Image: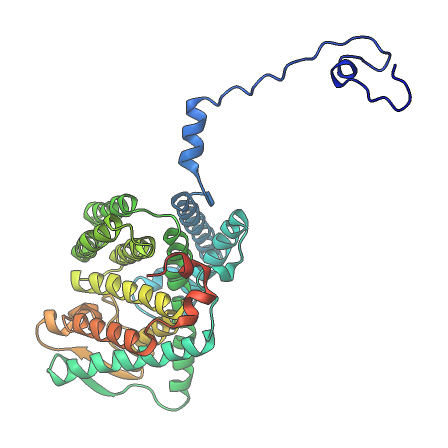
Length: 391
């Protein structure tokens, strides 16, 4: 006991229980260290931002292809043979169904990954300022760029342009149908590569993982004997080796973005090898325009310009000029165009995208992007991803 006003002895009071009986102080034993296997597993799966970007991308692609397979089976049960038509000819109806399957699967897969990451769908390169303006500019740019390429082919004698094959209401009907189909194409393909994959990989990929993945896509293209144009995948994978290595060695803050751009562009070229009638030039041009779209995301702060450009480029090529697309001629096109002369310059069955003229065209598109958009100051201020990977 202590007298009133007298402070108790800490040592004495701590050794007494409520009844005043002495107690023994139990030492706190340290937590046993985690096994090395557990630490390695955590390091493999998780980084400073949670689940590593490579695993997130793998999860996204797995879910994407799973949902696409499920939806394709459902469509086949309801309308047998509908999707097979798309493999033989380009028609608006089956095209819309096929692209809608891709978009729905994309939204489902990205939504699940967004829940895992605690993000919004718009966070995947769909925010930023002037989105509508960039989308409309992309629409105009895609039509102008394809028209310039078609004009160069016509002037060189490598493309014949026939009379209009549609008239009256049919022009509006097919134009609207193809417009909707290619809007879905732009949303689906850009959503997969320049939205989810580019955003996710840019914040976590490193050079060696990007190099290994690009080499893997090249190997897959080589082993896929039913595919075509594998040389374009090899070329895109090779082009990125030295520049990305230089950024990696300099420890540039922008290295992650450009490594992700290299990887997603190589992947974009690879998935196009499954199209029939592709050539190595057509596959490389697909990969290269993918890189241009990555640059547009960098400059504008979002993928909206790329979505608009992609949609109108395909619309102009397929509907307006009626050229071949990956070896397939479209049904319901405005003008009737056909290749002339050697396929190296005309593009042959691949259409304008398979012509050597596509290469200077892509350079001009890239220069136009840089001249028009430069690198706006508000980019770093409004987009946290670009704050991290600022040049």
